[in-house]
Amino acid sequence: MKNVKEILASKGSKIWSISPNAKVFDALKLMAEKQIGALMVMDDKGRVEGIITERDYARKIILFGKSSKETLVAEIMTPVDKMFHVGPNNTVEECMVLMTAEHVRHLPVCDSDKFTGLLSIGDIVKAIISEKDVLIEQLSNYISGKYM
Image (cartoon, rainbow, N blue to C red; front, side):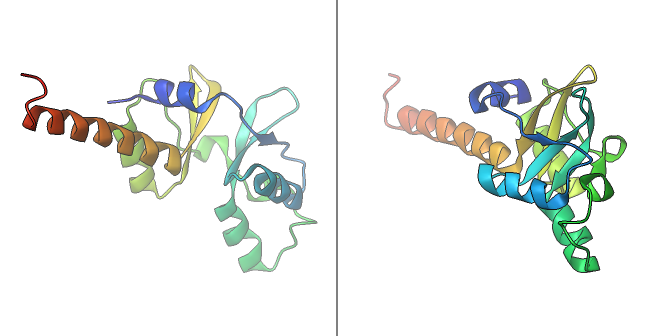
């Protein structure tokens, strides 16, 4: 079973982030431009302060009649102490269990208190499908006698 470190290695290391002092509108523009659903919120020294997601926007701006052009990211982000996260050695299955149990679509990856990446539910599903495809191919080869 793949682990988080392997997924990040195949995915690439580019991490998109935004300042907690930025406007929510700017976060949404960046997410749309990069076709992603979440941004890490980082201070000017590169320390993680939280995460902002499309869900945060939908549930904390639209539903309360706030303006994304006037509201700061810090006002609606999930702060670092409330974020669910995983480590590089967690398995794909552990990530899926956590995401399902906590109803989250993004998991920051931390290695000894250092932020190293961000996984989406899509990354996890892709890894699971890839593992199943390999298993199906191996079973098909076994059944057809290819290993004899």
